[in-house]
Image (cartoon, rainbow, N blue to C red; front, side):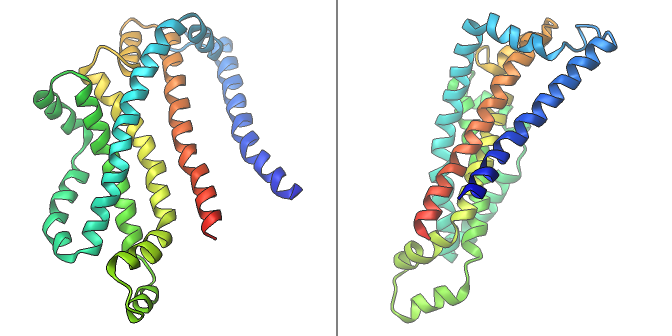
Length: 253
């Protein structure tokens, strides 16, 4: 029990300690080499700017977070359902797989201008970009998991007369949980990337727009303050599926 707790604390403290060392190293390098402020600013100014501009950064953060969560919450169930349809119904899979592959392989940098033309500059274009980007990751991971089930398990279920739904419920989904949660983790990061990329291109609000504004006026401290919020958002959204996975898989076992 104690060994497990020590390992858990080490997993938390090790990244934090490494980050502190990196920040201290950057602080020393900038001051020792007299790096100009337009090029780079010491890390302590990032947190100072975050504190001083909190009333501006916080609303931008909420806008971006709302876009991420809206697109993510649509993409995860849709990505799973489409993966189920593609893998459990061969005819559907053969018909729609080329179109799914086309969506997955299209870069976001191409999709954003098209979505902007079709949907305008409102929040809907950002949610759509997040949904498409996250859908791709979830769908790929779920499809991979559903296609790599132990055939002995499915054959055994067939021999006892299990229906397609029963095989899905008792074999396919439980066996694919690691893939499903991995897709949820990776798509959370993709959701952050998609929201920011869209805000860079077609928005005057959100953290992406704030970063673009700060970089345009060489306000590096403000820019890094916004980047801190972006990084924290990505880390938290990545960790939430991991925590749920531990609870679910432990319960399953």
